[in-house]
Image 1 (cartoon, rainbow, N blue to C red):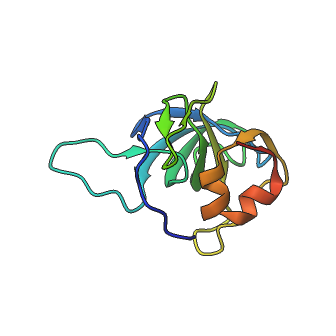
Image 2: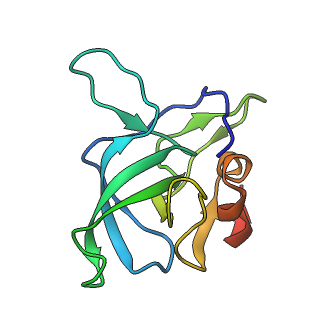
Amino acid sequence: MKAIRRSNTRGLPIGARVPVVDNSGAKEARIISVKGYKTVKRMLECAGVGDMVTANVTKGKPEMKHTVVKCVVVRQKQEFKRPDGTTIKFESNGLVVLKDEKSASPKGTIVKGAVAKEVGERFPAVARLANIMI
């Protein structure tokens, strides 16, 4: 996992239910925590595009349901600005489930829909599975 400068808006707070956009067996996950997030007292952690989160699978195959998994946010509805000045906004939110935190390789073999360019810089294994990079 490569470090990137954080300048974009974080649009997914803790407790958000986000659809999983790969074929790992999970359909929907609820965000529990965000890795590396620093905040003040009593403020909710929020995740943005390219962040690694811990999530609880709420819908999906029986063996995946009620498990805690590591995920990457690949797109968000909340618009964010890139360093070159362009504003990006997706139609839906999306997560990709990872096998483990150290290798950062995805559990599924297909990623449905578009993936943000920031994810490709930070997680190249996820970018290889994506059809469209925006």
